[in-house]
Figure 1: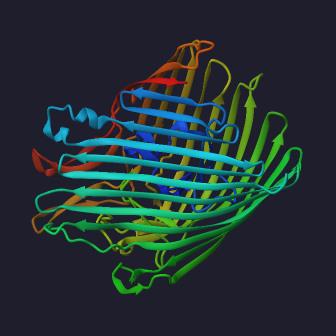
Figure 2 (figure 1 turned 90 degrees about the vertical axis):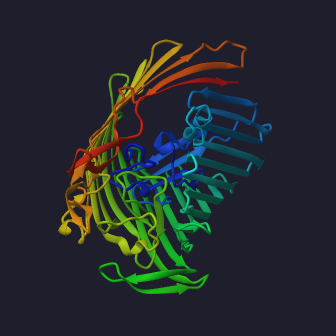
Figure 3 (figure 1 turned 120 degrees about the horizontal axis):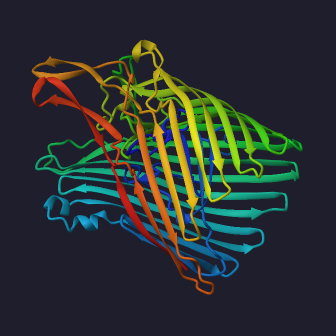
Length: 620
């Protein structure tokens, strides 16, 4: 489920947006979208395959509670040079791939950029001419086989978003990743991957005014070493085992101010930590129709110096603050994470699956908005912030339907229990709050539901219908008098319909319809006056909802039949995002009625209305 209009994240089975591990060639990606969710971070020209685990994830994955999205980039063609690209109204792209050494090594390079900022320069409005709105990203990968037993891979990603308003405001954020991996074949049965991985996400907010020139900076950076082995003792068994260590550098946010600024600079409160894990996983075909996967992951997390950390009383008042030296191990947490999955084939057309997984998470995203933003804050597990944990059980039924197995039906149900979940005291402001732990509360959660998916993969008309009925709740002693309440990502109903129709060899049409319950939010229920100022009074936490989300996207592709002997061929793609023009809510703000100061107006903010686009595609 998308976390909502304009969101940079998504929710899986009641989890928060930060509870998903998104990997690009093994490197974590902390923000997976451009332009507030309108574009994906991942360029389809660079992607080879994508694997999603939302139930019992294998033991080699960890660090998040809800899901894993494992994305692998293309290796590149090691025989001949190929290229592809597209020129569109909103963005353009280009990809090249070919051999480094024919038959032994290859490369891939892709790039994208939007150019709304180019059109802004043509505006008669001076503010628009001096503003910026764009993103770019680059993917690159190369590999070389030294011999039949050793192959080296290097891949990288660079992406950046920019939003600037004349000389008053600027917001910039982006990801960088790099992966160096050596594959080694010891024998026909034993294989290893050795990986060095770099990942960084950062953002910068610049404010320009006569007396308040300042910037807010934040980043999260990882240096990661992984060693994985795969051993196949027989045709019915596979053993995977390995270990990893990640050095985290997290700067939740600090202010840099000019000498003449009325805003005070703040200290750099960077956190340092070491996350480690070792795992073993066993896949076993116990019988022709029965398969088991068992796994155990031992995870550790150590908070490191230097740093200053505080203790608090029940009201969040600082009791003590202690500064620690560089290199000190300040606090260490160790957790066991058992995993189990079983599947049984019910004849030729049906199967059932069961799964259980315990997961641990030591990086926490702080956001008190109704949707995830690129400028939300990450903090590590500390003395006060404990590791989040989840225990999930799931069961599924899968069946092929129709004489030629034209259709497939999937039904899955799940229950997830969560501990050490994070929320905030009433009135908490995260931005500019550099002692944020004083405002944090800790509680438990639960999520349960049933998912239905009907697919059609054969014929001119293909597509699917997916529906989820679910409930996601949290419980905190200090919130709503300790009663269970809706989590922000609780959306009981979620529907998606996708249809693709191939009219003939030239034309293909598509449509996507999305509908869901609105996110849970807290609205004011009254107001009062303090020292001449009007102050809103809010009701129970997350007892209200944004209006429901509805969106219809339409598309068409015209592809000229490929002429034999010609390497170059092309196509046209046409699309309409939000074809009905519905104003889906990004947020709702409350303001005084200009005609009656005693009354309050609710004003809905929408980001994306109808957006048509056309792209000329080519490849050679």
